[in-house]
Image (tube, rainbow, N blue to C red):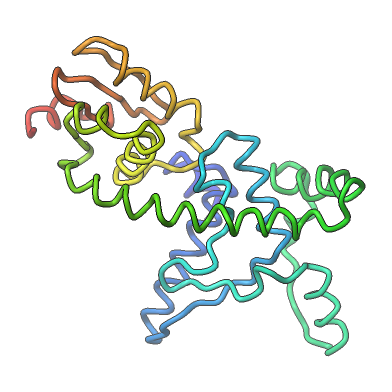
Length: 247
């Protein structure tokens, strides 16, 4: 029940459907001892994802698009156009199912697919390929910076619903890395990428760099960013007092 899951977790319907699909595929792969799950994401999906993230506000990771490999999930058609796939299916009489929601313009992705992409193709008929190549270059740079960020995140201390790091450990970093560490801390708390945009990351950095030793910032979904003298903390507001006492 996608709608029920969306209500329960505060997800959008689109996000709930995606999360439930991946949960099902992961569980099924484990059940049948599959080493890989191949999804049918294509070049158009990748371009749409880059544009969605750009419009919403994102960093290098969001502009890198869809990862070709993430855990057990692989995407062998990521450099193939949707029209090529559909032509192959038709030519070889291969039955397939088209998600009925693909035709509905109530979703942001479909609006980009049906309205924005045709306009961009008027300027560049190969715009999907151009975006995909750019995303690939950014993905390489993002991978390097992610390895550096991972080393820095060794200084992050975790407790249930809370992530803490010394403020000096952040302010001594190049500013480009500070935002990535903040994003990693947010990821460790289970925040959705769509809920925390680039402007939120910028507001958090401003809090750390320019606000007082006990300043606070409210974020979407009941998340709180907080300066605690020499420390910086991200925590969920619900049960915050209990979590603070555990630090």
